[in-house]
Image (tube, rainbow, N blue to C red; front, side):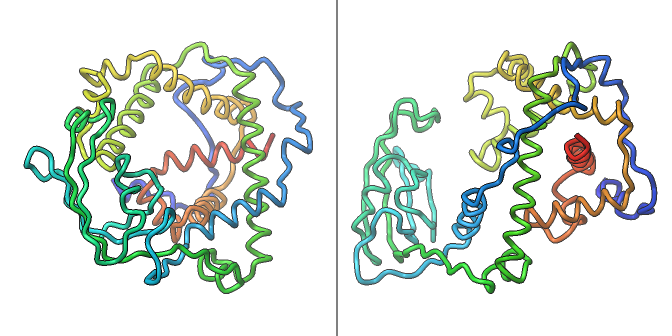
Amino acid sequence: EESSNKAILKQDPEDVLEFVYDYDPAEYLTLDGDYKAIVFSAEDLEVTEENVQSSVDALLLEHLVLEEVTDREALSGDTLDIDFTGTLDGEVIYDETNYQLELGSGVMVSGFEESLEGARAGDEITLDLKYPEDYGNDLLNGKTVHFEVTVHQVYLPVVPDYTDEFVAQYTGYDTIQAYEASLKETLEQTEKEDAVAIWLDEHSTLEDCPEDLKETYEQRMLDYYEMLAQYTYGMDLETLLKEMDYDSEEEFLEAPDNQDAIMGNIKSNMGYEYVAVKEGLKSTVGEYVAYMESYAELIGYNDAEELLEYFTEEEMRQLYMKNLVTNWI
């Protein structure tokens, strides 16, 4: 299966890549405007210096340097290296070692982080904290948990210097000038994509869709919630759905809000498919692979091969199709 997902990487770069579907998008979706005549104002597509600076700031925040603090007590915004256990009715429900906690982040139950402000390395702190009645976890709703915390180190997050050396280390560009030029180009493309997406959404109506297509999108929603259950909440999908007051996957999928979300995603993608099919958009396999290489670099993967370990080729082909439609419009 993995080999099949990456088969496109071994295909002849000169082969033609077309976008064909098991259905005609025009049979299910109508547009009430002429996408060939879309006009965007300069403001629609403008990338300001503030936009560029925001992206630079975000990069710097990703690579904060933690400097150990020994001459003062911990303050909100500091990061603490702690061990802690949480006990409920004599049973240990939390047991963490060398946990990195940013004070003020709000990731812990109310009162936990606030109680650690003023701590120093070596402090041992005992807390009894009551969870809200509507916390969202049947085990913890309205319950009091006994915490024992040991503080190992207190760190101050320091923003690194924005230099050519920093840019070369973390972006793949040699200079600030080269990085910001690429950044502006990426932001301009994002503005184009947003403008086209908004126009297509506002001017399209989805009358119906193939049943197997709907089933595909329903499965994608289940896959997303299964991942959310496992990696965010540490539980299986069935347990998460029960906590959301659904007795089954079928009941979850049939909920009006979820049906609206599913049909909205189908409509959004089919708007692009409509244009791609109507205009017979195509490219070469080589251009498609180059797009994947560029996308891999943008989101932090080494190359297209690594990218396809985390995304299906079908997902990347859909993104590429949207990119082609955006640029064509």
